[in-house]
Image (tube, rainbow, N blue to C red):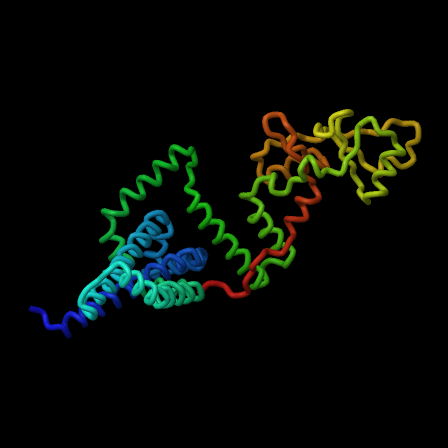
Length: 335
């Protein structure tokens, strides 16, 4: 029969191991997304063995994340099992109420030391933190591979059915690293602030649909195509706009063109020139929409779905978004 003191030490040991595993996997996942790919590649080519092994993981993000997810589950099972065993050991019995109460009491400890602190540490120094734990990272990768392999294959099967040849997670990782590279270039003086803002704007806009910057049809400041020159000038003066969207007479949802206020000046007796408004499919990205409008020198584009106009997008509005400062830009890069 195991002495009570030995059982106590065993329960504490299992809890500490579970807490340490939770910190390791939670921190590693955060650090993985914060890795600087340029620095990693340079170190790997310079002969740094650990950098080369980390670079190997970078090429397999799905497998890496699946390993971390399974590792976190194992850590949670160990912690919960230790809590349940501790209740039986110290109180002589267990119940649903006691297990729930003990879990609530220990949750702050697990959250702070198994999630919050390690994530913060790996966020600030991802490179060196991952290199320190590389041996165990590779060990658990091999150990859990029989469990992660079916998850990875299921993920790839879903991607195949969805018709997306590039995993969304891979795209997100690549985009985050491009943002880091641009930020590092700005801080090192390689890129000017304007160039950095333009690059960040391109990265921010790339995955977004044009509908996110669309003026809904019901809120468009426009006028009927049959309006006179004086009516259009008065409308532009009242609202302070330089281009006026126009819709078909009798149908204020059929936005088809626009007039330039500058062209109305000094053209008495000549019918206003209505410029055609390019049509954009509602799933069109902002960058594609901007390219279409720029190539056709159009001030507006009509966003349509199944032949119905949902709203319009402004070329000037999309251009302004390219040069907005990046939200949440940090002056500190990954280590």
